[in-house]
Image (cartoon, helix red, strand yellow):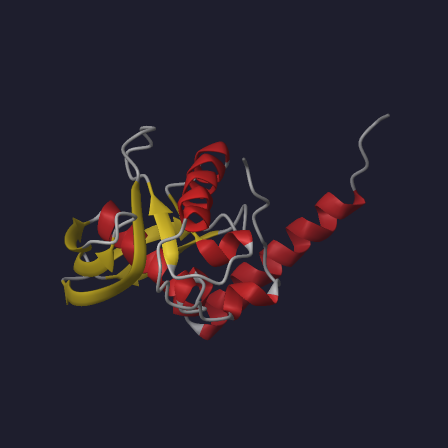
Amino acid sequence: MILPIRHVPDAILKTPTRPITTVTPEIHQLARDMIHTMHAAAGVGLAANQVGQPWQLFVASPDGQPGRELVLLNPVIVRRRGRLRLEEGCLSIPGIAAVVTRAAEVEVRAVTLEGKECALEGQELLARIFQHEIDHLNGLLFVDRLSWWNRQRALRAYRRQRKTLAQVSLPQ
């Protein structure tokens, strides 16, 4: 099932998520639904709070290939190395992008859907996805990583875009 994606200013996007203590059938279903939702929205990652769920869970598909997605529960970044400045966007702030500085490489520890602890290393795009989605789980958006001025500019553009879309009426 494709889930509705929450958009700024929805409060759940700024609320830190809770750890998953037991991997239940509902968590498995949520992960499947999030994967379908991410692909339907042409995204490369999606955090549980972006679909209104308060859990520390995200899905990722850096190559966009169905069947090769990553599902990580309770992820934590344990190592960062290097710096990389690239343009970044978000399914919860559609139509807005900005250059964000992030680590070029990260190591993440997490739990799989099978309940096994794992460690993954990501470079470049995968590292960026890990950092972006873990930020979501901690109640942060990519615009929170921008300077005050750039954040204000991006959010003003987003509000203008939303206002314009709200004024457009489709022919019946």
